[in-house]
Length: 139
Image 1: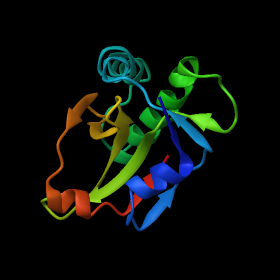
Image 2: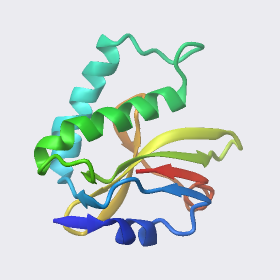
Image 3: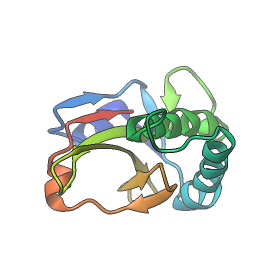
Image 4: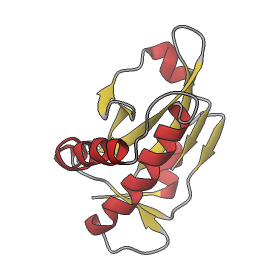
């Protein structure tokens, strides 16, 4: 199943800063995301000694997860320069009022949007207010 650039832009309107860098996106299954990629990402983050703190904060984790997801997913499709997977880097405002960077993905045949906390390699749920506060998404 695929998603075009235009469909992805429409799905994430009215995010203030939205960058959709590829022409087409191959939608991964939930199984690939939760059973293959995220456990692998968790191992990579540990092996790279990524630890939250002065040397690595939320945006470092989210950008790393975004980069490695795109590389790992190349096997899900014919790897071309204008095809990727809809896993993105996302910035929003938390309930506490601080900005936070996580990852967002579109998965499954129903094209469901899910959020990922890259520091724990687990899915996370955003409140309606947090979803509405999303100011930046990079796919």
